[in-house]
Image 1: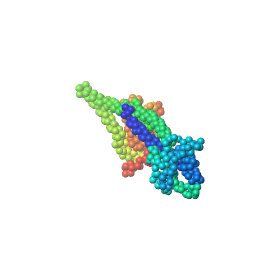
Image 2: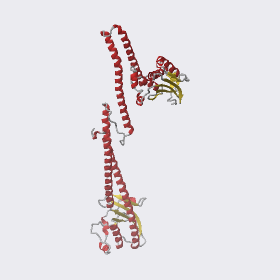
Image 3: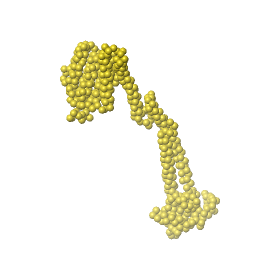
Amino acid sequence: MNYKESSYHRQFKFAFITIISVLVFISVILVMITSRIYRNSELDSLEKTGGLYIDMFADEYRNSGQISNQTMQKLHYKFSNEEKLKIYIYDKEGKCIFAEGDYDKNLIEADNRFSVSSKTVVPSSEVKDLDTEIKKEINGKKKKYLKFDSRNLLKSEPYLLYGTKKTFVNNTGERDRMYILFCGRTDNINSFTLKIIIVVSVMSLAVIYLFYVLLSRRTKKLTKYEYDFLRVSEMYVKGDFSETLSTDIDGIPKEITQCVNALAENLKNSEEASKTFIANVSHELRTPITTVGGFVSGILDGTIPKSRQNEYLVIVSKEIQRLKILISSMLNMTKFESGTMTPNFRETNLTDLVIQTVLMFEKKIDEKNLDILGLDSQRLVAVADADLMQQVIYNLVENAVKFVNHGGTLTFEFEKVDGMNCVSIKNTGEGLRDNEIQQVFDRFYKTDASRGKDAAGLGLGLAISRKIVHLHKGHIVVKSVYGEYTKFIIQIPDLNINNGNDNERTDYGRKR
């Protein structure tokens, strides 16, 4: 899989573009907000400086009654140069009556503290009247004009403007109304904005790079996982289960890979079970078919004399019966596993079922001189399918009689424990090894001892018995000590029945 074809790579591109867009948006908003805050602080500073000038101007005007004498000019010049301001004074009609071009250079330079620049300045006679909008706002409720103005009011550049209207008292006691406009340069604002843009840009680039590195690493890691997932899945499709998926990938829930691995394990086991099943079925079918075919061919071609044909036909009949049992058992297994088998639950005397089954093996019991214990116990009644349970008991008693030692003992127990109806069948004898206990309920499984003692057995009896007990929501347990005994315990819970139907089942005796 190509890296760029990965779904995670497409998500990476989308996430990275989104991050860049968000950072650009945040950066623009941040620059705008900080610039506005700084501009407003500069306007506040301009207003304070203008207020100080007005106070000093009012005191001097009260003393001299003039706006262009030496003291006024020095005051005007000082504020203009030190604060880098343009200060304009207008009469009550809005006509400029004093501007920076009205300085008397010799008069100002007479004071050694000042030196007038040779730059070109505009006298009040060339300054246009006070802007109507500014004048209107000053005369309004706010009594002032405080804004960032870029309408080429005075020059082809924006200014910080502070305008106000004041009434001044001259030296004769007369009251004169004047407008005063302060124009501050925006160099500091431009410089601050540029610095903010640089800082924000550098930080944004750093954040973008960091996100790129982190997302790139994570994307490559997840892409590798996606590639491995696809590769391993293709192996599973081909029947190769030699690899499993890693469960410790950050960002991938462990449950997903665990489920996939479990599914693969189940497929592997199922495939192995299918191969084993086919092999076992083939083996079990081949033996009687080969026997039947050989004997029939011998009868047809005369190899077997007529005097012995009946003898061999009896053998053929037994082999055909064995085939019927095998096929019937396999069909029952299929029904159990597909869930199509519907038990007929009713009250059943389990003790009587055991006694009836033991009587079927009376001849073999006598031949082995066995002792039978426990059949005189108190009767155990449970809700079960009598026919199916008898099949289970038959299989277990048959095994017990088959593998009990000569002169040994068969012990039966019937009891009710914690809502479970328990029937146990124990036989003395060779017993089972630990590895045999783990496989004894597998289909077609035969222990080494059973292969010697029961060549005609199919290895399906215990597998079918377990399916039947599970159908009753119960358990079948085997306990064994090698060289001493083997004990099978059937455990089925109490079931409630109504009109012969299982309307409410319990699991191990506890209501759902």
